[in-house]
Image (cartoon, rainbow, N blue to C red):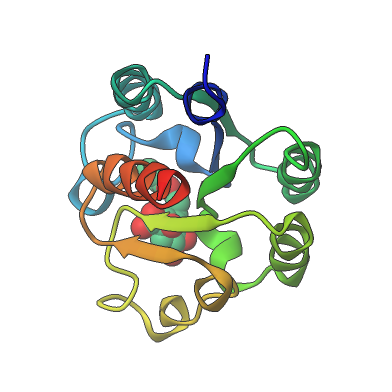
Length: 154
Ligand code: CA2
């Protein structure tokens, strides 16, 4: 097997969902859509299969747990897709952890954070991200995932 093929198959992407996203599909469907988080993860698993990459999805309501997973990604994952949820707007620690990995990061939001309350316009993550997808609903995860894999494969 050539190095190029082996590298491609060995790509592992970490997908992180922040606090309260476990409620997807059960509350506020008008803002966040009717699909559940399990639907999002299933859609991503399908995309991963199509693109022949490994995927690991994780949701937590705890900032420290998300940071632990980010640190564990060092040397294991090739990139990170993250919807930091409410921590987007507040967490210097999450930003520091992402920066420390030196991995490409794609930030995803279901809603358009620029079209809501003022405090949601500010993100601790956007300026260190490879890209940001906001306002395209659950499909945004897939777009972000595909964009990240495309970037990694050059
Ligand atoms: O639009 C997004 O994806 C957000 O990251 C979602 C966060 C919000 O704080 C960000 O400003 C934008 C909220 C996640 C809470 O998710 C829920 C899902 C269903 C019902 C209730 C909350």
